[in-house]
Image 1 (cartoon, rainbow, N blue to C red):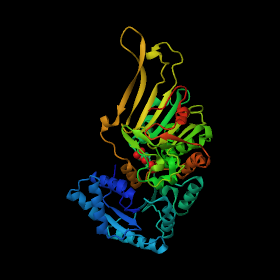
Image 2 (image 1 turned 90 degrees about the vertical axis):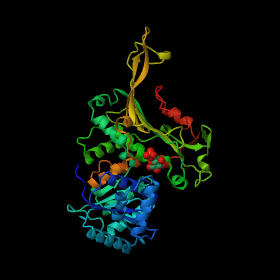
Image 3 (image 1 turned 135 degrees about the vertical axis):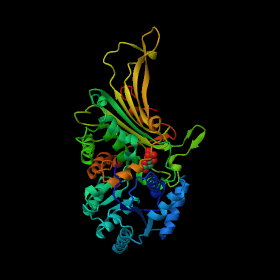
Image 4 (image 1 turned 30 degrees about the vertical axis):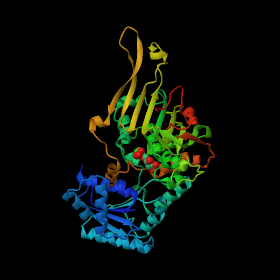
Length: 485
Ligand code: BG6
């Protein structure tokens, strides 16, 4: 594939957490793999730090070293040649004019073609002023000869009203084709592989519907608690942090119709259709939970309310389970169960598609079990891959069946997978929006999950290190089929 066109990659929040943990290592990886354009310059922008280019480069080098990158001279030179810094003194028009002049100067000095990416690696409360500032300073112009792209990190809004307002603001200054809303789950190879599995194989499509599928369990379980992010999480909770975005992505990719073409418009349109076809969630189809004290092995785990930055009487949900019904021809009557939580028994992101039982049972099953539901379990992480369970005759005289798996493991086939940001950054440079969230998708998703934030649903306690509240276990069990534990 030809390298994408050169550009200035402007990162707001250039010394923040996201830059340090994800963006800088991903950019460096791409550079080391020879995947960045020859003329590619990063302009870090931040409000709080007054740094020179040299100071920023030194900071970046030490961050990369801390992240375990070896910096042989040639690679170290990338920092010196390609990283620049500009302080944004304030978000007034003057502040953005100074920034515009700096960008133009950089483009002249480095003979850059005028393409620009503005990446908002900022807390959500800073989005509006930055988008407004860019627009007013004329930093939003997009032309055939040189493009401008705006990248916005999640969360995109706090609820339906704020997402509508943010979309409206962004559209006042940028066109939808310039906007790249990030959901980092779409950067994961295993998530993209849902498209490959479904639409690159004729095998699955014929059974991917209500005639053959009994139910689907989608789990994003985390072992970690809120760590140092108590204050952020208090304002966010599991519905905003995970359900409205990451789980919504897994749901739409699993349930969508085949797109007419592998293009951003076709793929995203099909995903939006899924969300629009989902029945409103009812109180009895949702369970919220919050972790109480618990244990993993011998280690004691504190309750959420004892975490730093968390209110002692907090009502923030750290767990949510929901039964989702998609009212369309393909899925009518097939429940999709979504489950996500912090401090669960183990880290596991999985989509389990359970098929119907055989209509008649001819055989004996081990231990007198009922005929088994074949299941395709797609493991997004860790242990990426999938397993298709089936019945096999056990050797010997008795005609008895036992469940076994056909398995595929990404690591065995391809080695380690990347964290996903590299892919997303390259797609931004190439101008492909397939792996980014469309404005209408944010609205459809908030319309569906936003009402959970208003309902006065009971908050069930669960022990840290368990699989969530017992009420969720009851909700998630369907005709004897349980989600994996
Ligand atoms: C983030 C959430 O978007 O996704 C975090 O804010 C969560 O709370 C994280 O831990 C999970 O991402 P991953 O890639 O580790 O599954």
